[in-house]
Length: 367
Length: 266
Image (cartoon, rainbow over all chains, first blue to last red; front, side):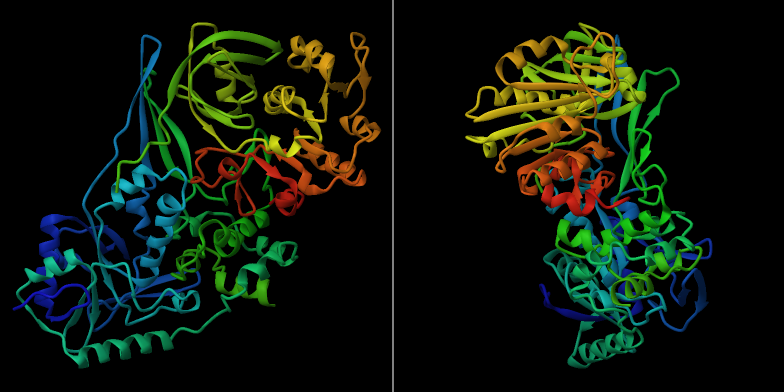
């Protein structure tokens, strides 16, 4: 069969998808969804059987459970995000050694060929956001992120289901994957439509034997399925003009209302695929001959986050919530020319008290 | 993607001179040939303890000058350094004072406490620039906290350099009272350019008086202090509104940050 370049499409059977996975495994460290402790989690995945086929995640504010379902890619995104791999929760920036009173420094930049297998539209948007934060809109591009990001192979999957906390259609990031992938899978009634988004995507697919040319009806079914997914989500607020509206509501008394519920647990910022804030800690050997400078995730909800000397500039919890929400929907636009929210809904699901950011944005900006 | 410069790499410089300014405050002259500009800062590193952002107080003969007050773990450690030791740091970071805006105009510098370290270099530079009138107000909480005593004579012989102490002291014959009192007495034309660095409440109070004197907010520049960890606009700690103090500042034209600076807990 003749190979197809960018833009081409094939129909693969499940066996074909397995073949594709195995081909990728030969070349890459594959990060994919996997069943883990009752959750679907992005993890290192070595074999195709580990994919959580036949499950779907049911989510609501402060609620998560898994149910059996009939198809394959029937879940949405994992509970955690690709962020855990490209901006790891803990990463050594520099090793400092002390010898005869003098310091020497060692840097190890990890450069690994990673493959994200099964990333959804919201997370793919978040990947573009983090690229801006760490690389393209940063005067000091981050070499650690760059090292892990460099060879990243992206297999995206279109969502044929949305859970109740999904709001990609509000943020304009999904459910359809439109760009930024090497290969794109859509589950159809006859099999899996696989579209090629890059040359290397085409090359790897070329080696897959179980495939046939996609036909017009396959693309039609894809559009229909995406339409159905989108129809199950409602638009929660108007994105246009949101930034200006929020800037006008910084003194709203509603923020204090949120303080009555928010417990500043930092869950939302950990679950968020774009929250990038970190702290740098010193990890010392007991003999004080070596110290590592370690970057660890931090959160604007942490009590010491904005502390200068002894003064905490954001003492109240509501001021921290305001910082978070204003950053996502207003400051971020000034800083990086995009929203800091992609509508994945993780912060809603993983909020222990069920604070729903869609509702809060609506009430603050539009009530 | 080309190999990127690592922003976390540290460099070393020999401590050439240490001056004890007052209890717990030391000035270090550290050998380096790294270029820097007035208003910028470095991240000074203490092994096993961490880093602290410290303004560059001046530039000498192939030396940078840092004045460090022992207020936290890192600064306490750095203040132990003595001549011949090595200081480790990364930088310089941040923007610089817009001194060109003050050419052929009045330049007023207002420094509160350790804020003098952030204005000293631009003040020294201004002495040799075409500034019509140069005025520097410096407020210190008490006599024992005064910095750079060895420079006052030279400064006051050249320009209007006034000091006020918050608390009276038998050893002090000069002004006593808040810096705002000193500022109120000052005659200024409306096109004065103002550089200020000091505690947030001092900056806010001074801006109010400057406004009463008819000086527009876009003539005022303030150097801010916030929680800076990475210094390269990535860690998020120093944000004030849409700005990262570490890379968009530390110096801000006042009209641009007023919204966020004057509002509580932003």
